[in-house]
Image 1 (cartoon, rainbow, N blue to C red):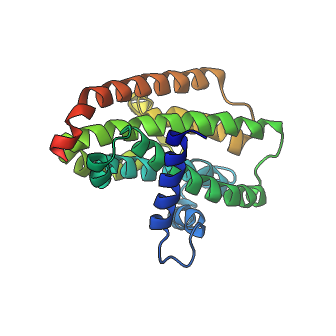
Image 2: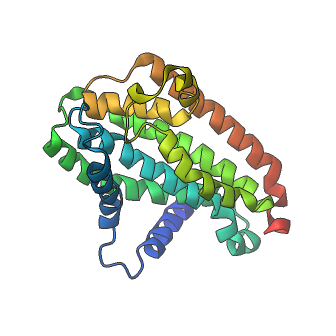
Length: 250
C-alpha cells in the first residue's frame, strides 16, 4: 500500500472518528437522517401526491442520494480551510484532503444505503438483476459530487462567501430537484429549466433502478456521464489554478 493511499485511509478513519465522536448511535445517523426527511414528506405530501404509487419508495430512492450529495458538498467546501494546519505543516498533495473527505461521506452513505435497501424492499422495491446497475451509478454520482465539492472547496479558500452562498442555495436546490414530486406537476413552459439541474438526470436513472426496477435510460445515462466529465475537468482546472495560493490565503 502506497503512502498516499495509507494517508487517505488514515484521514478517512480520523474524519469518521470526529464525525461520530460522543455519538451513541454512530453510523445509525446515516439511516436516521434521511428517514426523518421521509417521515416529514410522507406526512405533508402523501395526500397531495396520492397518484404516485408507493410514494415512500418514490421519495426514498432519490432522497438518500440527495443527503449524500448535500453532505459531501458541504464538507468538501470547507476541507481546505478545516485542514489548513495540516496543509501548512505537511508536504503532501492537497488533493488528498478532499479525497479523504469524500471517502468519509461515501462510507457513511454506504452504511445507511444498505439499511435503506432493506427498508425499500419492505416498501415494495422490485428485486431483479437491474438492481446491480446501482453500483456504477453510485460511482458516477460520487465522482460528480466530488467534482462539485472540490470546485466549492477550491474557491472557498479565496472567497469565503462561496461557502455561505452554498449553504443559502442548498435548500433551494433541494426543492428544485424532483425528490418529493414528479415533473408531471411542472408546467410545460418551465420544464426545460428544471432539466438544467444536473441532479434531475441523476435522479432519473436512480429511480429507473430503485423505483421502477428497470435498467437506467441510455440517453439519461449519457447525460450523466457528460455532466460528470465536464464537472470533473472544470473542478480540476480550478483546483490547479488555485492550489499554489492556498497557504497564503488560509
